[in-house]
Picture 1 (cartoon, rainbow, N blue to C red):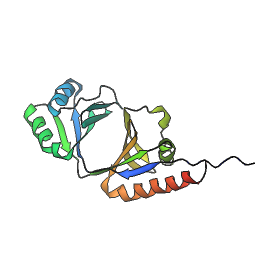
Picture 2 (picture 1 turned 45 degrees about the vertical axis):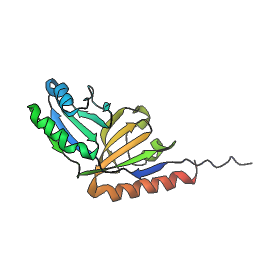
Picture 3 (picture 1 turned 90 degrees about the horizontal axis):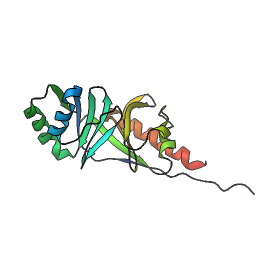
Length: 172
């Protein structure tokens, strides 16, 4: 008798709009910037730091991306401006959208378009990477992954993720 067919389930969903910022600051100013923005800034590249509904991902030696509830955008920008920190905080809320990818086959689904070995990316880590040629920011959160992509590419990414879901659902 043949082995039973196994299916792998995943969920892909568009996430609600959020406040997003690109922060550039020196290592010396990182702690003060995090304090002003009320979100810690990861000490190592790829580290996600969380404070309530706010979180940051360190993308490079002097670069972080910040995510917060949409209503926090103006207060965060104001607090950074008032801090006097020599750095750059640019709101990118309208530039990007996010998709949540969760379920037992989330890594397999993302492997359809992402060249990274996601099994080596622990929860609480993230990176700027590519998905089928698209520049994305990938967050490995507790219950799966979040993929940030420029808004104009969102329909294409969603179609790619949906096609990968169908492919995974056929058989293992």
